[in-house]
Image (cartoon, rainbow, N blue to C red):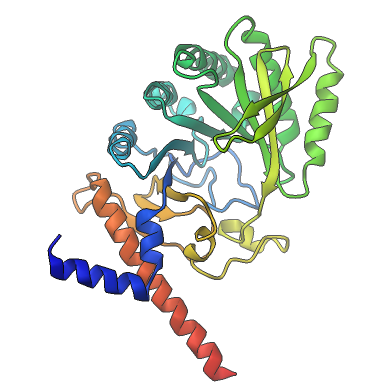
Length: 336
């Protein structure tokens, strides 16, 4: 970088410090692999559903950005695979999509979180494919880490059959995963809805084949995270601290948390940025929050752009949003 450009960037950073945040903070990569979903949940920030196209981010694109991020010291080595509903890839006969991606990511020692609403458990043909895949992927990659990945299951009042689906998935994994490496299930919900987790535990305890033990695992920060271990083959990690953001269809829910400011107003308080790629060809900072800071990951020919160029454009977009917010704040002052 030339001296003049360095001076220019330094000056702009002083005026719009959000550029420093976006450029310098560590980041987690999220791949919203599709917008298709079995459900049409009222809270969905992506407005996912059966009316959305059954299109997926190509596996090669996710691998390309995984490799690019691995060379970046700012990457936290954490990847989230989500949707829509990523397990719908089995429905649309892209059966190797999930195992291929999970093995690739976990096989490079990257912490992996795969999010699903669990609707597929209600379909016998799908669950007989998906459950063994999840167990085999876990066993294959356990040599890299004791818990090579986690499956995040939604347990809240907005997902249809959430309690029953989660219970069935736990029972299926427990039945098939005997004498194999433990599988970690992250049972997640919104703030104030943790009573559903207690209902789940009570339902599990009614099953005479199930024994629940208390355990702890150390987080990346060194804190002890409580677990409930089912028959020593499935571990449950509950968390019910998420906020319901007023994005997508959730804007119609009166209990949704209002988010009027751009994403950077929220991410300034976080330890990591969330760089979310979606199947529509966009990269967004954060997931659900307010006005989006978004740039394309595809070029004009439909090919994936390189990661440094995407980060550079996100910095520029964030600066624009900060300027826009400053103007709005000034207008409010003069109106008063």
